[in-house]
Length: 597
Image (cartoon, rainbow, N blue to C red):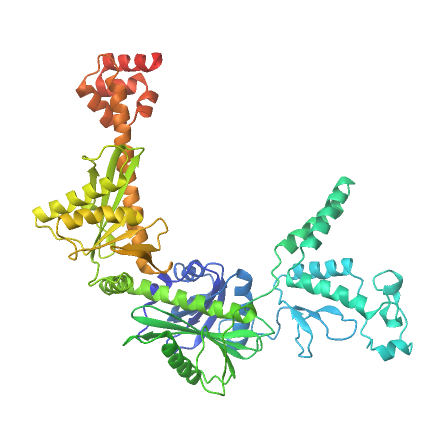
């Protein structure tokens, strides 16, 4: 598949946190970087001359940009670190060493120690992190030390060693930082209760700890110990920004491949994440053009076989969004909750973003194909006999029956055709009767189109649900258009669509492009109708107000209406501003009238 031009790749990047990867013409990785906003960060490489020769040479070599979208900046930082160490890009120098971010370890042993480490040892110990903010790590460790007296020694505190009196308490016991489990002065059950409380803090469940800190801060402040209060305040701020777990690095998930799929009418997009030793080390998205009505299950099975062969994947477990049969040798997991579900959601997110980028690129490069795709999708979603290239949407506007008006907006090929929008003053209906108003307006609109031999729309949308739809159908039947034009009603809950003769609504997917087009239609109809209604209401109010001023005739009244638009503006206008429109003597009459009334 031919790669899109570099400027097109940049133009369709998302405004989300993530990691970007630059590749040269041979597909060799050049550079890995992180970004709070992928689009802004990557664009900055190409819109200026850089200070260093190295960066300028790098930019000239870039042919392909790949990226992985992640939930937070912290995740981007961790993923960047993983990928640089795994891929060893030529232009990343600083992070190609073997250093990694620190973890907090709860050691698997009697009377567990809790300490900072950069090395993960698979001995059943628990690891929390990794942490990109060292200040946060030390704050958490200080908090633990202040709240819970734990041992810091490296003795093997087995039951037999304690009973034999092998160890003696140290200085930490005498200054109150440890309760002396080495001499049997603290029972294991009591010690483990403290460890369980610390585990909750490391998971991010420290509401109670925060309350205690805030009480302590207030106590210090009341006693005028402001320096101590400030120190506590800083700790509170660090804890409030604490992120307990990263999706990007998770020691519980090792050597697993994650696959997800997002599809539409014409194509499917399969994202793949490779996880090795608890870290994401590769992401790739494959797009598959649909030939027939293949199901997502069939397409995902094909994609998994191809990707495993292409990247020589040997993992014995894969995570997927639904059950698949891939043979007995591969364990298929469909997670519903927990860490594995989070990593699957990350894969789905990347598949969705990839699809959006491809559609944006198609819209820029081949707008006709983009329109045809949306029309085909709408035809299928709305169960129409043909593509709705010409759509008209109706909406009523009135306040307690005053100044009833209606609006008709027209969309061609999924986009507004504003020159064809029409306003209607309701003529035959007295009082607030929305159904009768809809019947009148729809009749007038299509009677005129028929009389003038103008093309009819393929789809009519009535804003207002079942009642309004029934009212519009009366006019469609009177004009003999039933069966010639498709007509549907949309309820207040936008995803509910009503069809003639069917009491049960059709529900659209909230994220579908069909719903987006319908939402755009309704918003336009509301805006167009309400603007006209507001103008009409203002003019009638101004009209009645101006008519009651002695010595002001019809011509003067029209001039004032055209210039000031509303009574409020006329009342606020100065005599000089009014005289510029209607002359000095009439301006004085108007100003005097509003002063006395």
